[in-house]
Amino acid sequence: MKTEDYKRELVFIFFAQKKVIVWTTALIFVLSVLIAFLWPPTYGAYGSILVRGKKIEKSPELLEKEELRPFPVTKEDLSSEVEILTSPDTIEKTIKYLYDNNLYYKNYKKKKWTKISLNEEVYNIKNSLKTELIPASNVIEITYYHKNPNDASTILRVLMDQYMIYRMNIYNPDKAELFFAQQADNFHKGLETMENELMDLVKKNKVSDPLKEIENNILIKKDLEQQLNILKNDSTEKILYIEHLEKELNKKDIQFFSFIENNPINSANGLSPKLQTLVVERGNILRTYSPSSEKVKSIDKQINETYASLKSEVIAYKENQLNQLHIVNEKIRNIENTLDSINARNVELQKQLILSQRIARESNLLGFSYDTFSKRREEAKINTSVNATNFSSHISILSKAFPSDGPVFPKRKVVIPLGLLVGFITGCSLGFLREYFDHTFKNPSDVYNYAGLSLIFSIPATEETEKKGSENLGGTGLRTFIVGKTRENLFVIPYLVSFLNLIKTRIANPRGKIYNGAEANNFKHIVKKKKFFTKNLRRNLL
Image 1 (cartoon, rainbow, N blue to C red):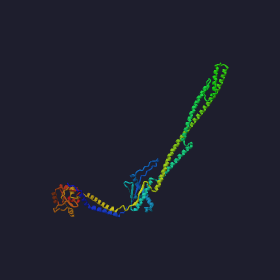
Image 2: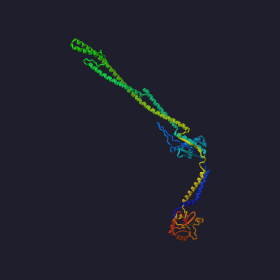
Image 3: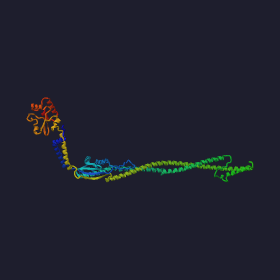
């Protein structure tokens, strides 16, 4: 069994469709030559931007200090920079700057810009911009295409400058300074209010440091409590002592009151020793005399007088002790009142201390907030002044805008060879497509492969054979069956009926028509079904 030779088929198709391939290649090549020489040249301007680092943002809501750490630049950051660079706002600012400074739009000086024309120009410039992220770097390469190289360089230079300004306005907006200034003023006013409340509180209580006074009062209270305890002990002792004196005074027997210390009655010449001497002397006299004797009565009289004097002295002494007890009680009462006053004062001072501490906490918070927003305000001022100089610590213009050394399109050395190559590829594609949709017989093997018919012979395809394809062959009076035509041969085939019957039929019918028989019906059916037969061929066969 024979297999198809694909290389031979490809070569066959190439030479079969060589007219289509040649004409298509020539047409596209001519168009490329015309484009290379007649197309208006387009020039480019190139520039690049280096993203040195990511801007570290400080949230205005965060008042406490935070550790700011630098982060590496990511692809998202580079893409964000590209979006800012090619944003309509940046391009619109570029157009207005060029227009106001008479750098490019000179013809528009007498024409008033409208929103539509401005938007059209924005999108024209945006479509002419091309950005590329250089691999393994933080560099953004910018290309701008224009008909004039100087204008391209000017527009790209202004665009890069406006990008720097617009980017700084985004990351450091002008309203930030106003916002931080307003917040700092608000906190300053709140701080002054807290300070005034604290001063009013000090004036009201006349205490500058309540905590210190509370500590002093506590020390005083401690001393007073010690004194109070001593006085209470003295008061208790005196009460018991006075009660004892009263008991002794109320006794009927003679009492010498010798327990009384530090009193003249118990001195060497005092009444108590004298009374004791008289009592001893009376006892000695009673040993000699009877109680009714004058001598005993005389000594009794002296004893009674002395005891009466002693008792009077003891009563006076008791009154003195009562007076001292009263003094001690008054001292106790005064100390207790003082302690109550100290306690009440400490309560008031504690309230003032709590209130002053609350005011101090709020003042500290307001003061910290005021300091924070004051620093942020100064930072915003610095950023605003930096914006005016187009200086950025995160972005740098690596290379300023410079024009290309020639037109970027069309490049004749590229367009002409490319046109030839594209034309040849297009021609081959069209030729192969044409061959694919052409279903006629193209070589002898197609007769059997596609029609299922045996091939008897083929004759060269010439104008004469094509014209007389239905005439007698070899002077036999037979008519040829033209099934298909190739570039080289005409095929003559019989159907499934025997060749002899076909010859007889053709002799009997010189017109080549088959009028009856099962073979004739089958022959008609096959001829009608096969799409490889042309209309003229079907008419001749049937």
